[in-house]
Length: 124
Image 1 (cartoon, rainbow, N blue to C red):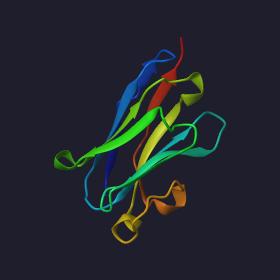
Image 2: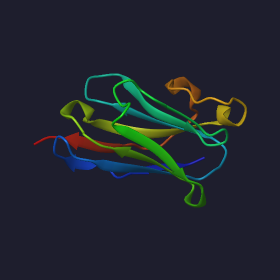
Image 3: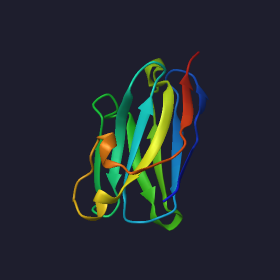
């Protein structure tokens, strides 16, 4: 499985960005995680494409929206009302548990395959 994350960049506080994760396979749970400098990896959102389940981290609820385009095998993360504390490298990851479990998990250990990350910088 290969994942390609894109869409990061520099945005002002209050602005928006849409990240994309192109996935080479099907039937996985896809998670978005982020890691800020000097901090650990944090869960942002996940979608179980096979069972149509979605979840968000507490700080992202109401601001971020995860969605998918099955025809393009791509998962999107729409990020609105961005804050400086959202600055991080954002990674997408795929977990095979999605085929067997009707949930999505905001835990990095459930995901076997990881993309290279895309940098989001929120600054004025």
